[in-house]
Figure 1 (cartoon, rainbow, N blue to C red):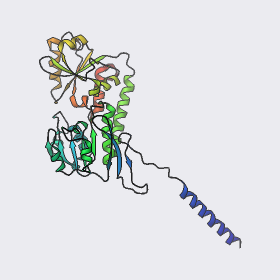
Figure 2 (figure 1 turned 45 degrees about the horizontal axis):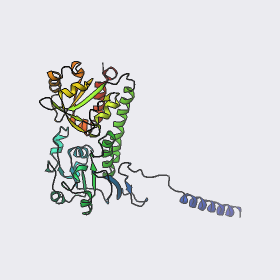
Figure 3 (figure 1 turned 180 degrees about the vertical axis):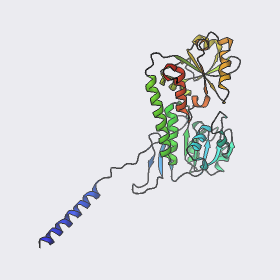
Figure 4 (figure 1 turned 90 degrees about the vertical axis):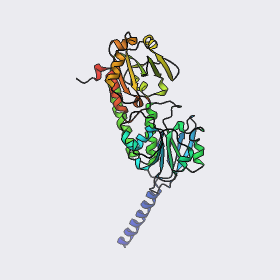
Length: 344
């Protein structure tokens, strides 16, 4: 009788425990992208990543909602920088069409050349439609009436979009990382993109910490090299290198409220920077470009020229940011504060 009573009690206890466990909420929650606010709409018990809803921003800064119902397999890419991301993160096989190559230097040039090219300028709507894409990854400036049409034009045809490289909202280091995070969220490759961004930010943090030991802030002027003593200034909203200069304890010279200004040798002399960073659109002989600047008689009285404090950097990395961003951060740190960073 005692054995029977004990068995009944154990059975009751077991059932109660099971019911209690079933009623407890799960402590696991799927993370979402802070940038595109990607939210899976699948029931929690399903393992499928798609469908996802996410928020993007058009070229005017307006929020637009997008939905991807299944994994994109036919992607049209507009913009060389975005094509480089597709290649780097192993998604180039999904690219069915590529357009708008800015012909700037790229270490992925050979692989970019292997992608199916629609045109190296803005493509027509008809040429994109003919490819039957299930996703368009493009520079935000592509989605205007005079170019590819606005975002609603594509959504009405059941095609979601993912804009990036948005200069209207300002180009920053964080916006460069957001482009990468957004691509990871939409293509379900966050393991790759998160690892890359985490590594880049960790390297940058090490540099910033060391640069904080600097006792002075050299004044640094950035411009794109021109001809006949004509140069071009880039304002902070049009590039990322201003943040790099400030991040390594330098002062980025803001010479105008305009984002893009033509400069003369006389204006550079009047500003008289301690150091000069000049960008090169195409990869060139940096030593030759530096020598040409240092030997310019019109600039001989500029402090940066007299002290040979001139650095030549890659245009695309300095302006829009590239996959070598942390490398540029390290190079600029050594240039601005060699006493802290130069290897012996």
